[in-house]
Image: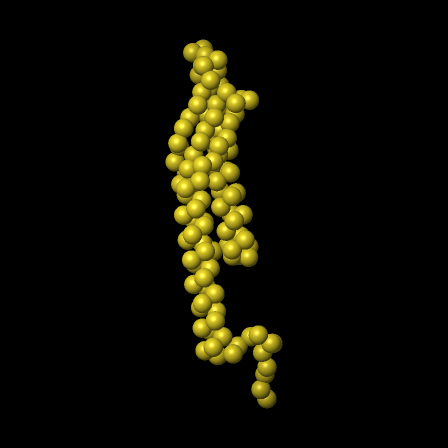
Length: 115
């Protein structure tokens, strides 16, 4: 008794070649998107704009702006918290953008080591 595969499944070498081409196209798209994201700038602020952070898609800080009115020598902890908050929010934006745009390419399949 022979079993049959559903339509579109199997097909031997021709189907395998087509699948390999699709994988190569996806790899090229992923590489292009990663390079694009790395060149982008992402911004966040905390404390109503008292602290602002700009980072590249590589998660490197490009600028850090601190308004003079939040610099209080008696309350350094608040300033530290604002910087941490702005930094973490910016990193989160980079990761969400990367995940969302990669998902459009991969169809939502998580590819370990890619992002």
